[in-house]
Length: 211
Length: 274
Image 1 (cartoon, chains in turn brown, green):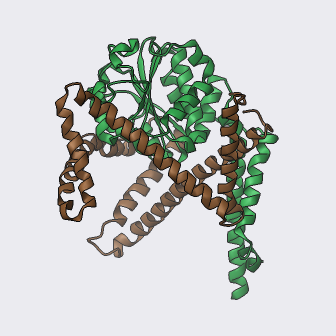
Image 2: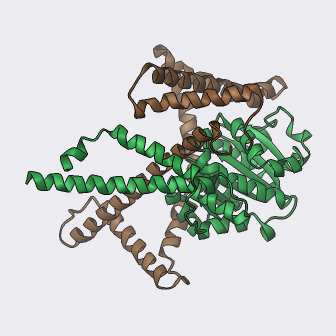
Image 3: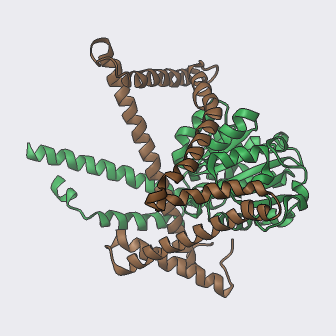
């Protein structure tokens, strides 16, 4: 990529740079009118973009084919309009029908493909002993096996976690805490990568590093 | 010490972080980058013997502008690799800013897209909505989800799309995600029809994606900007991800230091109280 030369692109670049700084003025300084302006502007622009893109999409995949003779397309259109009846308390019950169809179709489709990759393959992959990788692969295999069994035992709620169940459920709790910590850590690090991207943009606009 | 640490304004840390992240861009450190097996599998799955000229591949932009630093370097490398193998690439995405991502890709893989012809080597179908149902429908009839491409051209009028309408006509899927879209392709394309797929995910998706790679559901997986940097090394063209890796590593180091300092402070404070 090269630094833009067209006037509108340069204006866009600097507008983005200034708005970014105004947004960062909140964590780096404190809440202020400039920050609030940018926040409201961002929400308004995103809402407008979403509205336009989704409206265009409905026109493209539903209304235009219907106008060209594909009259079945009126069905999703009516279902879509029915959802808006939730805004009228008197007719709110009507909106339950399209929502029921959405939820039913979603569950049906989800279940169709989920059992294989999310349950069956995951279990097979977990309980299959390593064929290569040496001692480290076996340590990993045992670590995952202990973690899996003890974590599942932790959710065995029909028996009191005492006696023979006490030690494994405590180990299970530790594994769950480690897993949640790692997951949260990944989340934080993703946000930091986004921040890194902004730091890079900050310097690129100032031409301190190449774009 | 614990008392004074607890009273440090958090903005001080934010300032340190903001400045520290910029330093590696100005003075690169050059931390080593080791290529993970899952990234290598992804790269090998889209190069050389794995791809034949004319194969059709779907690249799903399941990320918005905010996730460009995490996902886009990996997508850039994959698009370059596929186009160089002579594959035909279908680009699409479920975010409303998908057009910006598409234009950004044309910029970041400029030479390859300049050498390719729109409609013959690649096509941009644009925005898709409808979640898992839409992805399922895409597998059985693309034209019902996308009657036209993003530029309102009928799919039948686009040369590379004339014989492409179902999962059967697609050789593989690369889904680059911040959320669930890779999972939708997994449950609606890979599982029922066996379409090979890989994911270019943000760091958070590593914990769900790597088990799927280990189970063989994904033929490869790129995790976060680190994965993007590894792919850039594999293709031999350093880009945004390799440049950003030093800064990302510094941010991780700062977090680790902050956690250690905060815990030391807490222990000292407890000791002082007792």
